[in-house]
Each structure stands twice: as structure tokens, then as C-alpha cells.
Image 1 (cartoon, rainbow, N blue to C red):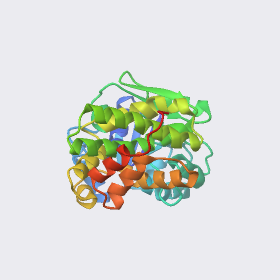
Image 2: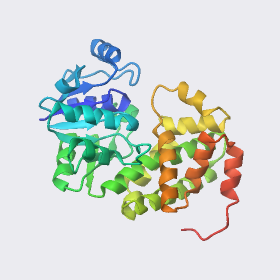
Image 3: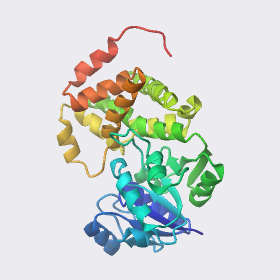
Length: 329
């Protein structure tokens, strides 16, 4: 059995802490909000993000990051993508050593870097492990059968994470295409926003099927240009994660898109959400990456136009449907 630190006490961080403890590991769960951690420790339930799920005894809520990291053989970063750098820098200052894992999904604004690249840069570890795949916290925490991927260039690292996390309800595969897994996991949130717009407009299965198919092609186009392998995008961290996120009632990104489709401003939709919709920031980062590489990313461009430029969903749809006709590919 291992000692694990989980950094981030939102729904997914709490879920991973619960899962690790159920698998027999000792877990320290840390977050930035001291008041929320005090409430979590007292109630033994994350009533804000994951109501109804009791923290096992093996989960210890820690207010101090250095204490949470002390002796941890594996550390999972489960904070919002734009907070990864600051938390990793704080972890680096602690001087603790661990098997570093990012379980967050997204791209850093400004640098446009993947989250594992940020961990490598801040922690001095050239090969952090990426944990990704179709895995809604609301389901994993309740033991719904789930399969995900642990990706690292060094397979011994991904196998280590696989061994620690795998149970009869959570099956973990390994992969050495870190870039492909990470881009698939991040970019699918952008397409999920577009899927939600379709739902908000009361479109049907034809529209959703076309959107997911062309969205996957767009994800793969950018992901391959950035170093991923094309076949990765047809696996769990690509197609699998896209289907789960774009179709699920649990998906915060799909939910944001649905509200945009109904005519609500982005600010209103985000202000009334408890959790972070990573696709909003990722859309901007993906658009900038695509433009820098001279790639056509029409769905991403229209998602950004709706989110940031005030374009109506009807105008975005027309722009997509009236593009130059071409061969599928």
C-alpha cells in the first residue's frame, strides 16, 4: 500500500482521494480554501462538490501543503489548470520528492503549455504522469465501472500509477503518447461546449453526431501537429473522453454550452456554477495554438466567437454550415 497526496479538494480530487483510500492507500487531501477544508474534515463529506460521498478513515484532510506532501510516494495534482503552476511551485519549494501526476485537464493561458510540461518545468521532473480519460467524479465516486489512462514516456512510471489506482471498478491502461493523451483530454472540453450549444438550441441526434465526428477530427488535427499520435485520439483520452463529456448531464462544459445556446451570457453561466468549466480557457488556448500553426479549427473558432466575441449561436452555426465544401478528412 502507498501513501498518496491529492492536491485539490474539488469533486475530482475528493473522488480520487476516496478511491485511493478504498483501494487501501493512506491519503492526504489538500486544498487552498482553509474554511472549506475545515468543513470537509468535520463533516467527512464534501457537501459543496461531492455531496453524499463519505470520506473513508484513510483520508486525512491537511491544511498545510508541506505536511500533505511529506512521505507521499505519489502526488496527484487535481487543481484547476490555471492554478497548476502556482501549486507546483509551492510543492517544489517544499523539497519533497514523489511520483508526480497531473489529473487536471487543460492548457495554460499565455504559455499554451500542457499541464505535464508545467510540472516538468516547475518540479524538475522530466516525465510526470498524465491521468486522463472518461471519468466523471459523480460516477467514479459511486463505483460506476470506469476506464482511464496513465500516460508517461517511461512505462515503469505509468505502470506504477496503474498498479496504485486499478481496482475492480476502475481499470487503468498505460500509454506512452503523453502529448496525444493530454491534448485529447484538454481539447474535448471545447467540443463539449459546442455540444451543449446544440442542446440549448434543441437540435437533434444528427447535429450531435456530426459535431462529435468533426470535433474529433479537429482535436486530432491539432494534437498531431503538436506531437501526438493520430491513433491516440481514437482511444479513451480522445473519443472516449469526448463522448462522455459531450453527452453527460454531469459535464460542466456541456452545461455551459447549453446555457450559451439558450442565449445566456457567458458571465452569468459561469457565475452560477460551483465547479470550473475548463473548456472556456482551453478554447482560447486551442484557438491561439491552431492559428500559430496555420491549422483550420472551425469549431474551436466558432466556440471562441460565441464565448468571447458576442457571436450568436445561430450566426456560429451558419458560419460552420456554409464553409467551403470539401472532401471529408
